[in-house]
Amino acid sequence: MAPVEAATKQHANWSPYDNNGGTVVAIAGGNYCVVAADTRMSTGYSILTRDYSKICQLADKSIMASSGFQADVKALQKHLAAKHLIYQHQHNKQMSCPAMAQLLSNTLYYKRFFPYYAFNVLGGLDSEGKGCVFTYDAVGSYERVGYSAQGSGATLITPVLDNQLKTPSPLLLPAKDAITPLSETEAVDMVKDVFASAAERDIYTGDRVEIVVVNSEGIRREYVELRKD
Amino acid sequence: MRLDTSGLNSLAPAHVVNDELCEGFMSLPSFQLPNSADFDTFQKKAVQMVKPAKGTTTLAFIFKEGVMVAADSRASMGGYISSQSVKKIIEINPYLIGTLAGGAADCQFWHRNLGIKCRLHELANKRRISVTGASKLLANILYSYRGMGLSVGTMIAGWDETGPGLYYVDSEGGRLKGTRFSVGSGSPYAYGVLDSGYRYDMSCEEAAELARRSIYHATFRDGASGGVASVYYVGPNGWKKLSGDDVGELHYKYYPVPKGNVEQEMVEASS
Image (cartoon, rainbow over all chains, first blue to last red; front, side, top):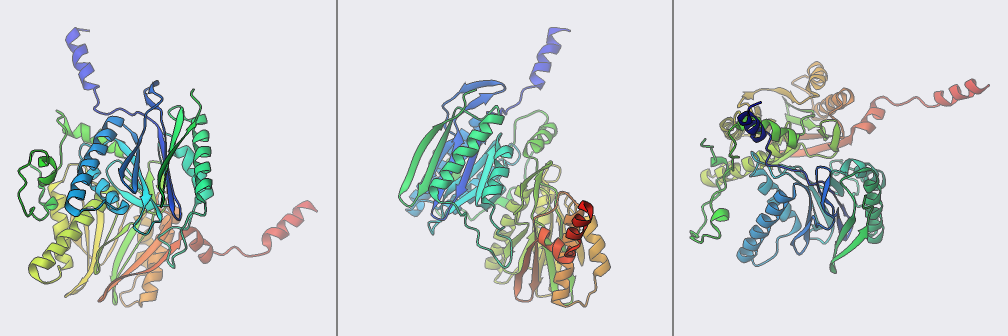
């Protein structure tokens, strides 16, 4: 095979995307919201680092966690932070969580023909102080839900959350009450358990979980060790 | 390639900002395109990555009292159910609704955009936009993006000065006026029930029940449809949500399990 053919063959295989793996979870409660992500960043079968945060605080009551291609995630976080700063200058207040949710949806859709390879969950408190979680696909379709998991371990975690937390659909009429029955400590324990389970069976999830809790008192962060293999 | 970005136009900013830092954000948004030599192959791969949720059943029909619109609520990504509570009936404004089938993000974004344009029309012309006009706005936008991989199969239903209106609009650029439509992977099943039970002079309750049954039967046979069957009615005073029922519960309501037989069978087997 001539060297020229080998060179053009390599070019054709280049992709602008890579998947850095990882799992993110968010749970909304009556007056709190838990957002969690593992801290492993991988490429193919290699681990790039065990200490990478996938969680970003966009506003005082909005936390975004994203799995997927971390370079795109970083660009997305910077874009949203800049837009939020302009909003604060123009309106003299922070963006509410539902407003940030729509901003994120539009930002993702403006790259509809060259998508951000980012699978996001947005968690926080709405204007009434109740927990809210928004879940996204890669091009911006979004939905307010009571809990969500995204990333490589999502298919392992979501059935467990469905079993423990499933609330009547918001589409039902007459409407049924849709508050997650858990207290804040129970929700945090649930998150630790599901990540431990996901780390057992998903090679891209492990090392450590970063858990961020938003409530009326503010934001707190805690870390739990996971399997490092 | 010059894309039509008139669909994204918002009101021009009051003061022109000449600041270089803000240039990227304050200027009118337009879609970035990848700098690849082969746009179509890239889009095919990108679409696979996004895996738009296509499995769905939506339907709408006109009858004597107005328009009845119904949809399921399942979103699937390949074989995985990504959500059982997707809102597939989108409220554009108090007298216009649209249904969602195909790519969820595409439908959500362009319906929201259509709502903005309808409001601008109201402000500019001091009267509500007609269903014909609203569907034409959407169809023209989708036509200009034809071939770029958008996936939208929507029905625009509403009530305007000429009475009830129903249009089917899709991402190929098609726009059809009609009285009965069903869109999605479950539509063949829904059509079967809808067409056989349809009469123009139904009452509101009969029409709602027909719509509900059609969605139920589609979710029964189509794996990609399920969740909650929502039914909306559009009348002279705008739209109203009539019901939202879990299709699993509808099944046992329509076909209840007769009591007692199971226990009898078990007793006979052991003796």
